[in-house]
Image 1 (tube, rainbow, N blue to C red):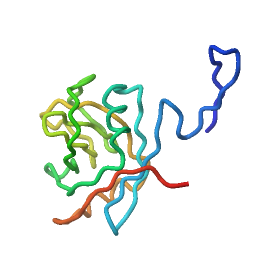
Image 2 (image 1 turned 60 degrees about the vertical axis):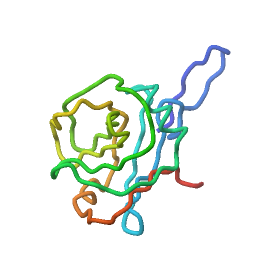
Image 3 (image 1 turned 30 degrees about the vertical axis):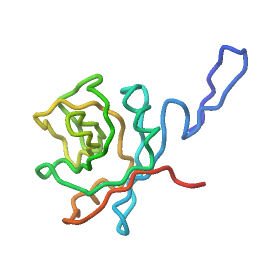
Length: 142
């Protein structure tokens, strides 16, 4: 889905899948499955920028109830554009623990989080998490 945008230098620029506003990543449940993940800068520019500079990330997968899968990072970014309600497939950052959260179902987690993106497919793979699983978040080589 390429779209043209007009830049200030009177030229056209293509917005591809890895444009300035959206970054396509892979969320891998190590040695099990891969889920496409888009981080969207317009949702929370400062937080998404900080996360993108920290990629690749890896951490033990955890569940918060049955609706949220997450992993902790060492990213330190305050709350930005806080929300309390999320839809299935949303990706959010929980600043109090430095965790990146993936919503398996619509949820009101009781914690204010920073929205940062969306999962594109295979969301139900997160329901298969087991103790000891590891998340990896990275850019697809290519």
